[in-house]
Image 1: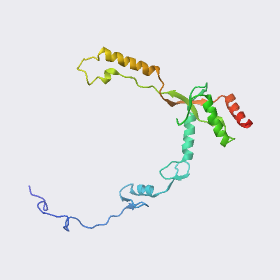
Image 2: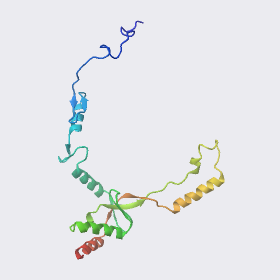
Image 3: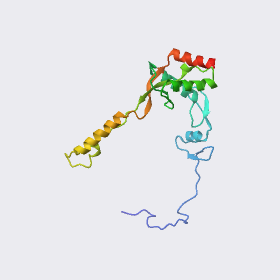
Image 4: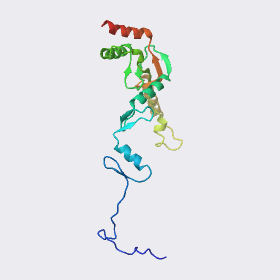
Length: 203
């Protein structure tokens, strides 16, 4: 089998044959990044060079690489309204996004009072609240822990198994360790809303 013509040729980096000068055309974004001329290059260059974008849903102009707040708020409000509604009986609450928790009525009342102090026209019934649910803490599966240490058909020693059972009991007895926002939206009682609103008007 014959060799290619240049296979036995020695070409050093400074040789004219090692490389030749050429020009390449393509899309360049506003900040100088080159995207070439392949399919989609123009779109990428324009997106990278833009400072703002137009929302495809409502037409609002918003900062690039962010999101349209109006559409986001609308979608969140619709998702919240679609949740199962339950009456509040004083159980722990969370806001819809899980950023803030209220462990009792006093905590919720203080939060509403702070809002009303800055915005007297605020309607407490517009708060997006959900029930807070305790997270389950994992317990120790001692057989799984020792799975790679024991011979085939081997068993965990009784003393170790009993200690694991005791630890699991402590874990269960001291739960919950953390909470999360549930999928049940809360309807605040009318008398509670009237009361916090009245307290503000009288202060």
